[in-house]
Image (tube, rainbow, N blue to C red; front, side, top):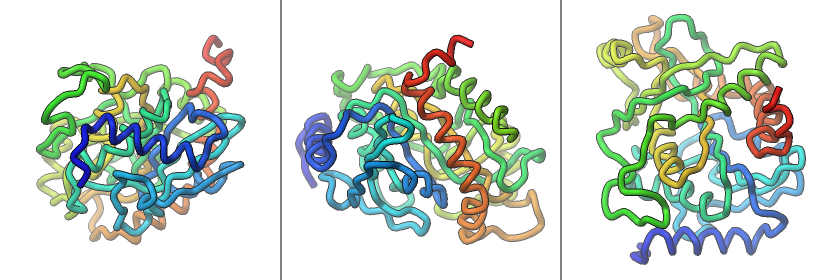
Length: 286
């Protein structure tokens, strides 16, 4: 493993990516979760780089994660899109899980959209519900900022009062309303996995105020905010959590639900991306 400082490794990864796609500096970065990778296939002028061709990137081992970084254009906005991610439960450290986010920052992005497939805890949710993440609970037992801090990334003790940008949430809500779809808001709880939660754990999470549960997103969001990147978090409720419905949970169901909302999810992202980048900043003043 490369033992050079994290900042230099992220810069090296960014240089490698720029050598493959030098069209424009990406304005927005994205992480697409389980079964949600289809958005990346809609980009124009796209170049796809397998994760194993980017220095410092790990290998995604989970079905539903293509394992590629796709660079391209969406409505005139240059994007860097992670088509899949790495997870803590795959055996990677949180420094490895979040290294792509560090690299997106080194590439020059100022805003990120982090998506996931999640289990629904809120009884008013159904499979296929899209949820804006308003806040999170880090129940993974670890923090990606542990260890030495490099001030070039951000401060030793970053403020997390507003992890998920309120303005971004309002922009996404307005676009969903224009589409005629309901975009719920809620708190996302992150556990390590890979086993799904027990019914007792789900009752505990509900008592803590969680609306959805998953095994990702939170480490990436913390690192993004450490670098002062603005974050929009989106969950697709692909299954109801253990004990909510009287049936077992399996990953195939997660992927099937992700496919069922593909068109809606893709359209929402296509509408929101120009707003996050400032490409259509006049809309913000309405």
